[in-house]
Length: 110
Image (cartoon, rainbow, N blue to C red; front, side):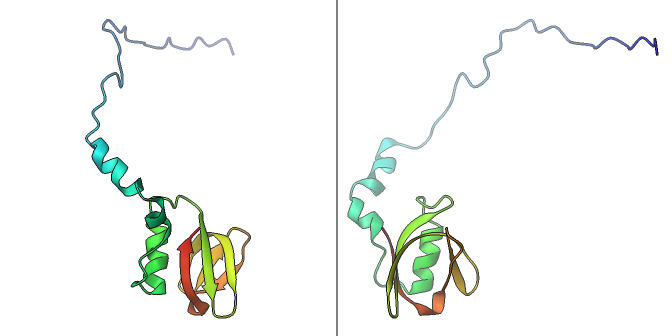
C-alpha cells in the first residue's frame, strides 16, 4: 500500500482572469417598461379568447414560473386558487385539486 501516486499537472496561468467582466445587454429600457405600465391590463386577459386560449396564455405568460394566482369562474361557483399545471382535461392546483376545464366559464389572473 506504499504505492506512490503520480503528481497532478497544473498549468501555470500567466495572464489575468476577468471572466464575465464585460456583459452585453441588447434589450432597451423602453421595451421592458411598456408591458408593465398599466397593471390592470396585465391582470385581465382578452375577453374575446375562449377558455383554452386563456389557459394557454396564462401558462405562456412571463408571470407564470411554476404557479399562477387565478380566479376561476365555474358553472356554479367562483374559485381563487394557485394553478401549477394542466393536462388535457384538468387544471392542477397547488393543493392537488383537479378542476375540469370543461366546467370553466372564465379564468383571469388575480
